[in-house]
Image (tube, rainbow, N blue to C red):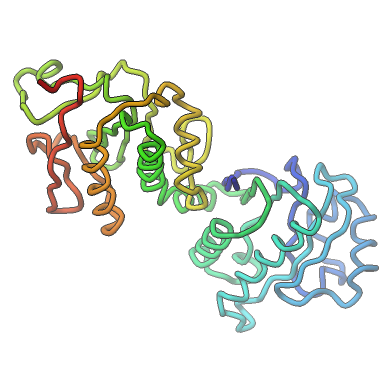
Length: 328
């Protein structure tokens, strides 16, 4: 399992196996010594000159020792210059892939990247963010932890949003995996915060669901069942980005990994229940939201639809089946 994180801070202080030093093709031999060389000490730059006297082409990576850095290795790579007409995004993608390939050869288990491309090399921030997240979240590397380190809050916030843009879907897919494992009592209760800006998801066991009239009699509906808000549950809000409980669920997370993260945070869900009706209903809901890339909404202050689930602007999905313990 690869954990992909956005970190706000200084890359030279990261306690990882390797950090990436991104520079031009000359590796800064002309006196433009970067922060990595300054912290690592003169040995790093001298080793770099010996190993790469002619620099490195874009996408090709090399390594030196970490010297005074917490990291054991520094992986050096050159960045294509957008300002010089190197605007093909595959060039930027190759930079990340080259670093990961070298990391695998070195046996690296954790690595920290800067956000490569914007600033000195002229890449638009959105392009740089998209490339970083897409390549690092779909990599076939053996690296277990990948950090993308930025020093400014603006880019960090944008990066966290990018990493978390599919967290909601991965969590739903994780629930489907739990059903496949025999934990058919796992249920969801998705909705919108009163502001209408943040989506939230509650995952708990079917035994904690009760008729809504138990909590709000004047809104009673024979089709609507809601969880006890004091019940043990995994709670997620999109404002948290990719952070889920004590872990991270990003675009890099597989459904099986998401299921494991859900269970780690809420072990009580690992119970064998028979509820094929809900499993079939959930499979249908998941198929629709996956196709539309729209979150499901079962509750919101502006939304009263007798237990049905709203998807997108105008789609109403049937209400979920009655929990087994409430069926006659």
